[in-house]
Length: 503
Image 1 (cartoon, rainbow, N blue to C red):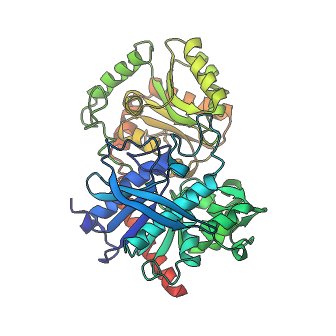
Image 2: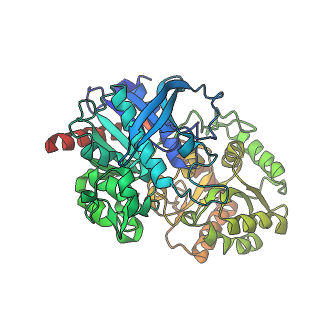
Image 3: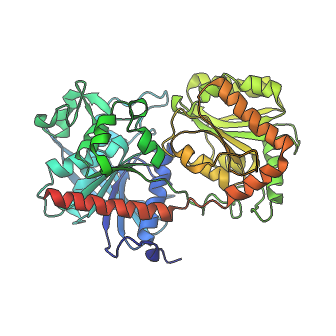
């Protein structure tokens, strides 16, 4: 396919600099990394000039990813001192250039944001302000005169502020418009006001209308205020975050953006997540020939020590054990589900230590019916998507979500809360005619989860033809990156127009 033909929003070739704290395949903790591993490549394939800048963490495999030295030294002026770093580079999939800011002081650690005990690094404000300034300095020094500087989440949100405060008349970056993507508004980067000197954004900007937040500096708020356009990663989440319930204090500033705050649904990479071509699963299959899914189910049951029975449905879980994901609410009813219903669970995840203990012990308490792996394994994630019959995501909020989209392609029916991107990507089952692609519930409570799982399980046993019909419909859904990239290009051009109106 010639992706250049897909860009119907205009022939202009854009120069786009993306700054992010993580990117697949180099470093990942969540969906942000998946977006960074796909969106730049799609935009590049559409004919645009794209580069990515991220930290060189200690966990990155330099040999595997063929990193090599680009700059031995680069000076970066912060507000009250000059910092020095090196820059390495490689090409993502041999195509998109990725630059790594090397600073042992800030990034020579195994963790991205916190230590092994999940304690945030105390210098995170300095670490990611420095990353952002270094990325802009790299663009300046290499004469990459970006049309768009695209920042992601709180870690790089201040790029929008730096462009307006420091680079407004820069010969290289002066024309660059800023776009800020909020992947999760629950994380905002709130730090003591004393960091303003290091950030170099001037005390005159430390006001409630700009950077100040109850006496602290708020990175994400500052990015929202200064950005030429802000988006989040699904239309429903964009609407939710205009309300106090979901916006964690930032609803007024998002509403102030008006039409310059919008939702663009994430895509997924079907070259990695497609059961017809997936090299990691025990057997391949498609909607035209589902026999491989039965093989994957039996293999999953064996691997997790479950009873081998093709007639018992498996509910899969792949998740961070964090408050956002609602796994504590599932924990309050899962034993009742296991006791009352002929169903199996396969659980892959880590995070909250109390939940790790609970779900880890669950496999010992219910042998043959529950299997658990505490941690993360990409291979196991593929096995669970392929071998499960249902996939549950009881999220308190979900900006986009990716696993429910993977599940659809693998013929694994999602059971999701009707929020954010889950609402946008899963069509509610209609028991009268067997239509839909999954099971949605609204009230987040143990009772609601119990009943929606019961609804799915009863459909499995009593209306099996509906399961097949929903699987086939789910597997033909297309959430590839091309449509999302076209939406980002429209957003970029809107940001450029906004920037031009200010100059």
